Length: 212
Image 1 (cartoon, helix red, strand yellow):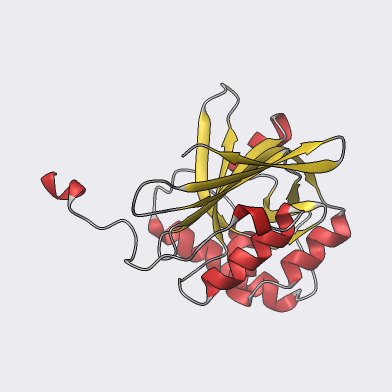
Image 2: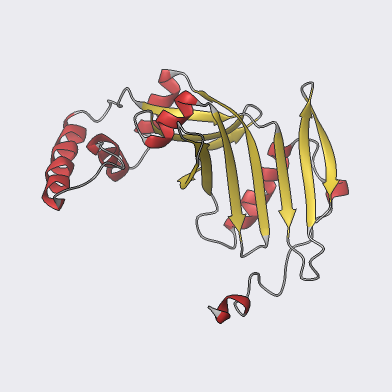
């Protein structure tokens, strides 16, 4: 494992981040960074969603950002999935975006709330056909004893989706993370990384520069 110290972490040229000129709201700056990342890296909308289970142990997985706006950051999943179950019991989460090709990271955390059923249904129906089929297969994270069972469930789900193209599962849910804090991290080769934290105070955002 000696090679761990030899692998490069970031490209030679990194973007410049000037916190003093950053937008007043974190959503605005985030969209700027996301758009810029999309010009350089694959899956810039991929995000690590972190929750806690019934025992308080942390759990994390990569999902896709569905939207961002004044109300927060949106992701979606089945309410019967492990992450859906965890959010039902403890409606708090953290999101982590990492774009190594730009030397940038965005972290946020806060309470989570489910969207209205019609919003969640619209989210589901906007998914590609293969993604809708996957959602109807169900049994996420359960033990698969025979791969043939997956093939059979997929065939049944595909039939159902083709016969009911305008139907969304009642369990499909869009979740909105309304953060209390959002941090933007810009790498620097001299290790003097630039960190800017937005902290919500009485409905307004306070910007704070952090030590690396």
